[in-house]
Image (cartoon, rainbow over all chains, first blue to last red; front, top):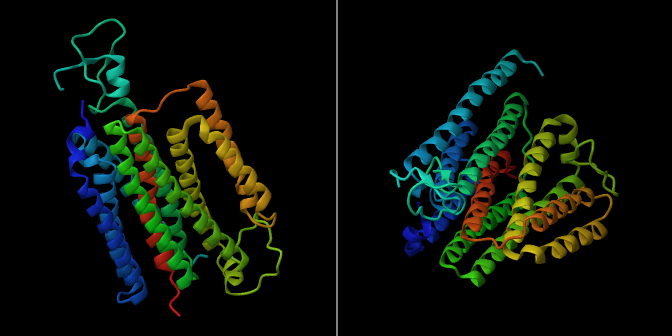
Length: 104
Length: 277
């Protein structure tokens, strides 16, 4: 049986690094939002990329998914991501169509 | 691990190693090689991520077709939301340290780290509640909310009239997240303090109900604590147990999830609606 305690308690320092990285990435997001060096769509893309990086750090390290079996890692990740992709293709073309048609 | 296909009940429920071949009363090995409570929590989190995904998509959908989209968040709101983010990130670190303490068998530090996590979580809820109260007082509201005692006229009152999609999606999304954080704090309280947490929760509910003014939406929202108190009492009295390291780890998964969701709400809702003055 997989035992997180036995394999990872000795490397607690990495969790402090992850915590520091998450705080720094948050600070970068706030600065980018206030400097407004990018136009809105590009800003959204950058903020979402940073959010995905932050969520990968949280899922991988804090939630220990990185240390689970490959089957569990891939099954959970792929199923959730697939659902989001399906939702994306259902929702956004319609929102764009409303904008194009000028329907309020 | 792969060659063992039959495990004892303890192996399935508590991650204990199997000791030999199948015997009466034994169970099939779990699918992912992890104990069943952990797999169950992961499956719940996968489904809950779709709930938040749908809310975030709804927010984005409304934003795309609503022009112009309001940008009401001044420096004070963004600073507040940034501190809230730091609280949640720090709570995740204390939660990890609590899980390690539990796995070492250090009960005192497990409780201490869980209490620290609860303090950060409570700080998040209080800051968020103060921000909601401020926004509602300035006119950003929904039809069902109690009206503030003082008359409201200003920029945010105009936002509620011109683009009701904004308060609807903002309050819907952040309320759902705030509810999850509240449930998380109560979950950790039950794991850390067990029966001792029930009178604390009852006192918090009563104090909140009596002290929060009736024209504040949280005067009614605080009753979520009463519902949680009843549910927690039923669970604790029907199945009294001493929560072990696996229970702490599973509660940690839930806690990190509410942190994870905020990593998307913060940029999408706050940073993309920043008002630069």
